[in-house]
Image (cartoon, rainbow, N blue to C red; front, side, top):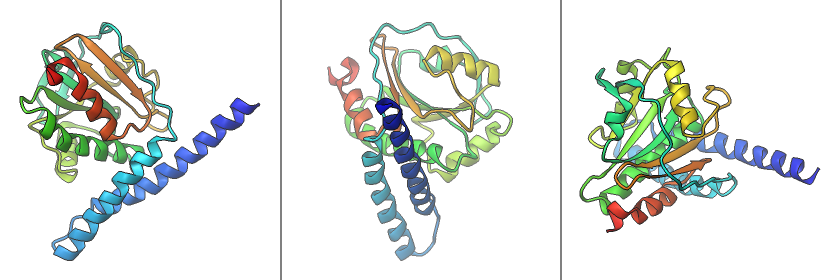
Length: 227
């Protein structure tokens, strides 16, 4: 009974945090030509970044370090319409992976904002650009390459380091399951991040809204970065 009450309480806390943060990030992403409005949006975004860190404390973060699992070598499309194999994308790189969809107005907004903050942090710890970010859409019916490009522009994504990918739903399901994420249904999927180190053959999985400073700290410990 205690465990049931605890889990229910955790779900309620996370749901409230997600709704609040979604509103914050939506406001922060609003474009404006007025300097004062832009400054207010940036201040609001900074507030939300801090709130995201606090909200993450209410989420269980599962961390796994073990030998790399066998991944299905699925074919995917980039935001530029380029056809790639996932093995080509991951080869000899450290890749931080999340699963999103562009029409999401809640958790995915937070995941993208966290990746954007992580991207900034990587500029200070990854001078050789060994680390890349990959967001995989779980809504292939809507998220065409053109839609992904529009999303990248709206979210101010640096496509030099960050790639958006999409594939058929069956392929995405196989890939996500291989990483330990069994549910990629748009309405019920749990947020999560994977750090896939193809250089030193190790990986970590985080289940929950993992704040960017936690991810950057773990990345900084990897041999290819710390050595």
